[in-house]
Image (cartoon, rainbow, N blue to C red):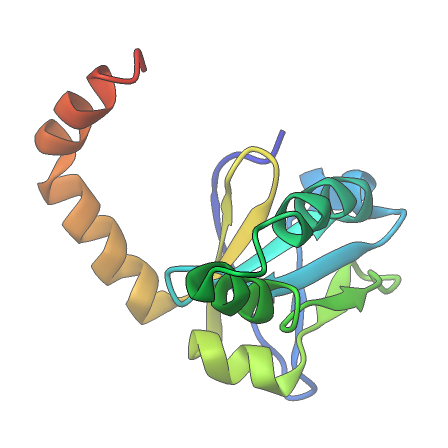
Length: 143
C-alpha cells in the first residue's frame, strides 16, 4: 500500500525519483496519467489494468464519461524505473500538473500522486482547514 508524503526533485531531463520504499511495487512497470486535482497519478501496471478496465466500461453515450476517459486514458503513459528509481515524466504531464523543481509524492493506497509543491501545500491547507466538515460528510459513508 502506498502511504505517506515525500519531497523529491525533478531534474532537467524530466525525471523524478520515486520513494525507495515503493520501488519494489513498481518493478513490473507503471503507468502515469493525469489526476483529477491537477496532479499526476502513478499506478503499478497490474493496478492500472484494473483501473483502465473500469474507465473503459463507462457509458460512451455520456459526454462526461467520454471526457473523463479521454483525460485519464488519453493522458496515460507507460513508464519504467531506471537504476536509480527514477521515472521520466512526459512534458505534457509535467505541464498539466505544473511540475517544476520540487515534486511532492503522496501515497494514496493503490497509487501515488505527484504534485507541484505549491499546489500540494495549497490543497493540503484547504483540506486541513475543512477537516471537520470532511469527516462529517464521510461519516455518512461509515468511514
